Length: 399
Ligand code: SP5
Ligand code: ZN
Image (cartoon, rainbow, N blue to C red; front, side):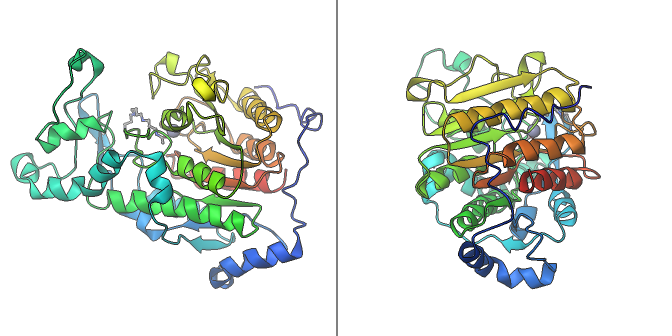
């Protein structure tokens, strides 16, 4: 595999390396004020300037139990232990527990009908006799109002909850149970708290969001995702005064949800590199190079599909390509959809990226010198995924 060319970073415009640890003392002070309660416990060394980690114990409450794939229940891969292995790998980083935020930003990203369904579906399912009838305690859709079914007609809303689920959930792999809403909503608070840390002067913050979010559209959920944490973070950065925000998605899968949210908007760029959906990979319908946005958002979306087996060299080149694009577009803040499932060991993708690749990707994006919120997306190999997140954060903090 070709090595990434270390020389080409320096020749680019807009790469000031502004993410260096020499912070303005006043700003540093304000930021420390926010994180002080937990700094002592983590033994954080102020000189080291490790990226602060925002998390919530609530995010452990979603238990996927299983995923129905081609009709067969297989063990869920998006498990709560993902939170623990990441926290272990980031021991020493300042730790900040998420603060509650209201639904203002969330309601601008997602339709009220989706939010209402997600908020109440588990309780309604439990109250219905599904567990008694078939032993199923998770909300599983089985009936989908596709364009083929509707045939141009206007359907009436389905009365049955098991039919209603398919109005919002577009696959059979993203089951909803007791605790799912609480975890997903807590992940949104994690993302919003990370944005708050930036406003308080932190150069960047890592949001340990779980469940992940980049497959959630304004109205539809799937791909192990329920609420789009990265989209919420980008919208909150717009509210914080950034005129143009970029989302760079390095998860192994195309973030169709984030793309859909910002498809017609010029003020939030979406760029993604991912395993080529045309080779048969999730999310199947989207993520091709020809998808570049529409209307006012024309040109504000970029997709770099990669062949199965792609490793560090071309993968890091694709990250660098998106970083150039973000720099040229004059964005003043960055959200990274930081999935680490592009790793060679990961069970959910055929990409072959190493820890060094993730470190290099962190350097490429850290070199932009933009205030950045790094939002956890996928990554399923428990033994190595924490180290991959740590490698990316290290590269990002010291480009
Ligand atoms: C956030 C994220 O990374 N979502 C990825 C969703 C992709 N899921 C597709 C699953 C395809 C079948 N995998 C079989 C594994 C059985 N457990
Ligand atoms: Zn993924």
